[in-house]
Each structure stands twice: as C-alpha cells, then as structure tokens.
Amino acid sequence: MKEEVIHLIAEVLEIKEEQIHEDTNFIQDLEMESLDFVDLVAAFEKKYHIEILDKDIKTLQTVGDLIQYIEKKHV
Amino acid sequence: MCKLYILKNRSAKEMLHEVLQEQGITDIIVYNAYGKPFLKNKPFYFNMSHCLSYSILAISSKEIGVDIEKITMRKNVLERICNEGEKQRIQTAEDFTKVWVKKESYVKYLGIGLSYGLKNVDTLKLKDFVVQKVDDYYIAVYGEDLSKMEVVFR
Image (cartoon, rainbow over the protein chains, first blue to last red):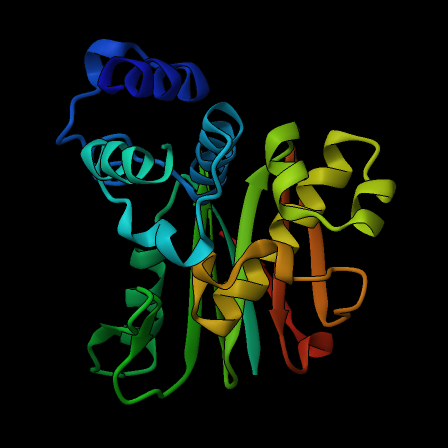
C-alpha cells in the first residue's frame, strides 16, 4: 500500500518518488496548492474506488495520514 | 472600499504589511478554524492567493475571497468538482480554470476552504464574481460591492 500511494503521488505531482516519505507534509514539504490536492484526492478516489470526504481533506496533512485514511476506507 | 493588488514576483503578505504600514494600522493576523487569515481587530478584510510568479491581495471593507491559477486542464478535478451544467459548458482549459478560480474564491470568501466541498459551489447560480485574465492566469474575486473594485498592478 505505502509504495502504491507514493507512486501515485509522484505520478500526479510529477515529482520523484525519492522525495516522498510517510512523514512528508503536503503543504510544507511539497508546497502543494489546492488544485494539486484536489487532483490527488480525485486520483486516489478513482484508483481505490473510495470517497474521500471534503470535510476530511484538511486532516490529511502528511503522506502517512493519507495511507492510513485509504487503508481504513479501502476494505 | 475594495482594492485588488496584482503582484508579479512579489509576495502578497509583504504587500499586506505595506498597506498596514501606510494606513498606520498595528494589528496581528489570526486564523479561523479552517486556516483563513484575518486581522484580529478587522480594520478591513483581506484575502491572498499565489500561483508561480504571481500573487494577489484583495482588501475590502467586507468579507472577500480571491484565487489565481495558471490556465490548466485537470480532467479528474473537473469530474470531481463540477455539476452537470458546469461540465457541459467547459470545453477548454480556459473554461476549466475560470470555474476553478470562481469556486476557490467562493470557499475562501466563506472562510471554509476545501472542506465546504467545491461541488457544492454552483458557479452558474452565483453571480457576484469578478474574473480577470492576466497573461496566462485567471483571477477570481468573490465578495459584495465589487463593482467599484480598484485594480492595482505592482
């Protein structure tokens, strides 16, 4: 799961996988803007057939947060 | 009173501090629960956005929201945030970017951000936007009484 998530983040943001770790913060480390974030959310919803609730988006601050969220939703 | 500063290679936060200094206002920036910044004593409202080399700052006597984005097309985002009517009208990257900045400026006006749900913002029904194109960027401002908004390039 972790490797898959990192691979997809790298693909959507067009950055190297080496730049991404579980404790990587989307805003502070990757300087992501809202558009990138929604693009990422949409990509994960599509890949894992899950719904990421809008109200939950701001709780997903790090790659680790996103992995945990997907693991809970993707049964 | 409403003023939009369009800044190239300058930070909106620095511009804000300049405005505060010009007006002799000493106030601190605080944030609401969703991260929207405002001046503690609210001598005026403001909102900022940046994209690559451009930044924008809007100051107003009323609550305001702004967004700037370089012209782009993100199909996954379009599917996620647009209603059927909006989807039918989006043919080009310019169309998409205009809808994106409108939705963003509205949720920033509300002070709720992405948590509001961009799909809940119907840009075909909401009318109080000012949209401006600068180079390859679109800017949207949402607020009240924008008809007399002054635009300043710095």
